[in-house]
Amino acid sequence: MKKVSVIIPAYNKAELTVKTVESVLAQTYKNTEIIVVDDGSTDDTKQKLNSYHDRIKYVYKNNGGACSARNVGIKKAKGDYIALIDCDDIYLPEKIEMSAKFLDKNPDIGFVHTPVYFIDENDNICGRYPRFKKVPSGIVTKKLLLKNFVCNSTVVARTECFEKVGMFDETIFTPADWDMWLRLSEFYKAGYINKPMTLYRKSESYIVKHLEQSKRELLIVVEKAFKRNPGLGIKFREKLVSNIHYWQALGYLRAENSEKARNEAIIALKKCRFNAKAFVLLLLINIFGEQLSGILKKSGII
Image (cartoon, rainbow, N blue to C red; front, side):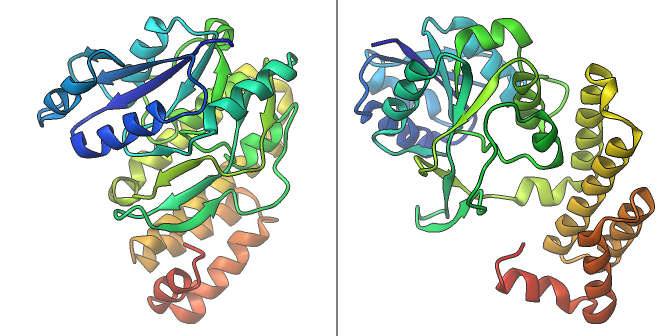
């Protein structure tokens, strides 16, 4: 059995971090090392984890963000495979076993991921992502640029992948995972197991409060991708930028700001006039105005 290093970046979520650690300890696959990188927590994370000292590696560092904590964990990992899970998410018992066996059987695959079940603050399942049935696998870079269908806390990758593409970009926050999956996909095939094996705690409060930052960072990820892949073409780039403004429009609707949502939808259409989703969204905003946020929330669209 190849060793799997599980990296858990932790910050001021002591109780939830314990749940995450417990879910990894309960895995059916036992050849694992658990590395919890405490990113300068000021709560009792360290005290809560003391009772696990003989079963996990606890590393404390000054606060630098989740990406810096992941990078510390990856560099300390001794495993053949690296699994990434955030400190408020939960693995189902066969998660690592299924992922490791998949990589064992498919040596041409660099990393594997699964769908997730969304859970609320009480661990109740409240959705699934991705919702579409057919998720791309193999060579996925162009499709992944159009939509990030790789959910954080589900990826298990060969350690050599990070040696090839480098660490997480510590200068960005919200789309740092998307940036990493894109870089991995440019050198390695992606695998997909169509069975939710992670419970992903849904909390959009940070993104909703930092939508402008999120937009800037998403555009940075696109620019980085095009510098690495100039052959993708101007038209494709315009389509991607249009998509980002469309996503921002949805974000502002979640924040119940229909005026900014309208502006983002208009920009999306200016960037790519064939963006049908942006056209329909702008039409709905003009028809329903401030009521649209509530309508879309009730329907589960946002």
